[in-house]
Image (cartoon, one colour):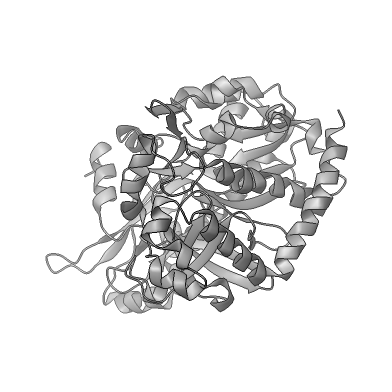
Length: 505
């Protein structure tokens, strides 16, 4: 069957629709808002909050509160037990286990047929559509698509409801045209034991003709290195000569970019960033030479934004619509969706890079920052600083975590960086200096606190032994592709756990 010809036809149709929401973003969001409210008007949540009386966005703000998982959990628990028409009118059987970060217990996010088909699958198709649009001569459907999903065991919650990582739900429900090109086999993709899974994924894909890899950069790198160990090859180009695209998301790609370039082994490789979470598929890098991601406005999600300079969780009083945001300011993302999430604070922060069309970058988490001493360091700052240090010292990163060192016993404060290297820097002092200097250059608040060491001493580096972060994840039953090491935390709780597990205290 001429898959490439069929997909080329689909691409042209979908690109026209994308151009429409780029041209009329506010109108598309307004229509989607009305459809969400009218569809859910006679659910229990809709009746509690009088959806049938909501005619304007102002009505919506007044009648429907901002929510986090804690507020929606009692409703979700009842859906898990089999009750329906609670948050959304269609039957809900699937729940995505959202790790967010490893700092808290997993959340179970409802996945409806609408959110699966009109959001997550639509996002996957659009990613390929935009890629084909940018590179019309490509033949991606000639080869296999290697999906590095999370720990994907599907579990029974009740007689007729199930949960698993989002990747498990997607793999379980993939349309046939996507399934026939996916690798590895479903029985491997759905394995829950991550170490065995990496081995079997590597063994089973080395003879495939892989054109696309999709996954979180850190875990994809683990798989890639195992593939090279098994095959004895130096680069992935030697293993998969037709490899041309890496679709990545979940964490910043910048600290991993140079290592991927080295391990892939050729320049004609394309990287596309996506922002796909358990709660929804939010953005796709749609231009070749622009790192900003296009905000996908017709996926059944109504967007709101809380300026981070006035953020106070569900008690936040300043909430903006898409038409009110500005370039360069940091916002907490709020969504109402066809999965039954209402004014839900996702926990991620974004910064708009353009408003025509709306493009953005992910800047961090609402709770992933360090501001113990007024330094206001966010994940985006830390990623840039560590990328510069890696490059200057010719080191390669596996992962990192940063926390404060408190002012105690007359000592000044500092930041402790727990870093696991793939290859350690030959000069750790050079690494520390570039890290500190770069952070001072890009963050004036940090620089002010570091001035003459008046408040903050230089960073303290703690090198984590290889496999150390995995050991900590495993001790918390969190080892898997969708579980991430929290990059920044404003207290020492996670750092102390890691140090204790590794006997580094």
